[in-house]
Length: 491
Image 1 (tube, helix red, strand yellow):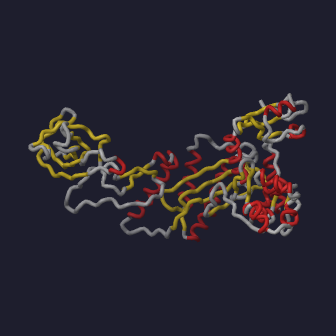
Image 2: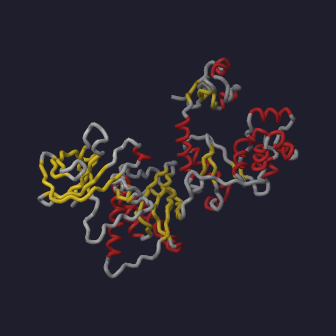
């Protein structure tokens, strides 16, 4: 168990394998006070401080924790970006007034993270690079608009986070702060240290802005509710979700859109974030249908919602939308039937999961096995038309195929002709009619050139049963006789 930081416990360092050796990757305050710092070898650290507590670095768990914290910070804004390995960037444009201004938002964010036992620093500035520099190399706080460059000039050269060789060259040149560097002509700096250094300097000084790439793409539509007191009743939370569904439905209708995915995010006071998502097979904005899906989702949760200390915010986002025209049912009632079928599919997906409710989609191929593929019913894919049979003629391909094809024993009048009779599963079938062959060559770009060609026949036995059989290969191509297979049954 790692040290808790109580008085009398040894200093704690975290080590990782770097360049085939164990080096410090992080140190606590007591270890830093004793002169230990990251990148120092573990052997050297033990020589300086013999009673050292050592923990092994786990980058994967650190990354998972950072993503969890990003989800927690979505309480303040949906635009949260990772600043690996140990930072987050929040775009709070238009959100600060909900929390009493930028200072209030910063204070609440720090308090929310400190309740998890984390020591954090935060800054609010005009650009992401300036914010990172003030938080990591300055005193943090809220930087007033227009003061970015003046305050950034006092930051140390380390705020550039330049390579070690560049930092050493800047120090030897007598440059100690960003102000010292900013007073030099940018052309000279670019020629001496490279253009990336000048770009980085301009961004920290607030002269150039960059976009934040959030961990989750901004939704097309969202609505949220913040509560002055934590909400601890599940029924009340369901009511809030219903209100949010009505709100986003009104917004979607005004834009002529429908939602394909609705995601409710519940923020608990202790930092736990719970997400509930429902999908629809087509664009939807009917309030009753979406609410019914959410109720079904809540009823079928394997891990029921734990209210705990209560939720202080609920957000409903619509990350996937499509154009949706007003629905007008025809007099034949088919529109009503299609709507009822779509609602049934949505309920099945919500109850059993998207991977268990599938539909077939036609593919652009002549190969009978690959002519269709099963995809989740709610996934939007480019649809190809199914081949239409000629009017008055039976279908050329059966709906039911065997995988793999069933071997059969045949007797043919001529070697390359259709069979006169065949035996399948110990039953002999006398052929009354046969049509073919339909020659289907293999897809050499997938199967290779060694895959044999197939000759397919539609045959009917004396009792009226119809089969789809094929001969694999040709007589005379090899010493072995071609093999016959039953591939499908016609209805």
